[in-house]
Length: 159
Image (tube, one colour):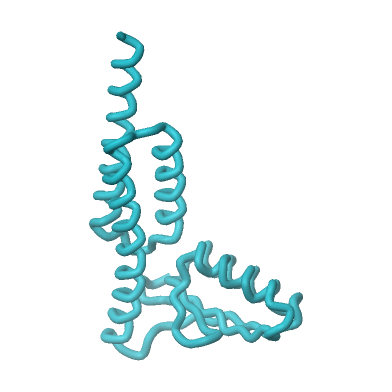
């Protein structure tokens, strides 16, 4: 598929019970879906995102709602760029939060914190479609934290 192809999920769920709406929202968040308007989300189209939206559409219908998946392209290059920028800004903010956490943890590094940050990094990377520079900065900060932990443990063993 072309780089400019997008997959869209248009959905409507009943307000009650609220559980299916919450579950859907969480799954869309894990995927990194970009909310265009209420009930319409988008992701760059690839086999993984297309399949994910098709599964979610089935879940919406099973929960008593309506859902459609669409594939298409924005009407102009400016719209395409605006969508990409919105996604990039959102994911960069997540990496920046992770970077801040990793830097703060360096004052009292623990293996548990490092492992949690690595898991969070993997979760963010799974929904990252544009690889901003903040990704590399967050990775580096976490690896520096891992290095500090190794030094701390080696020092403790030698004592």
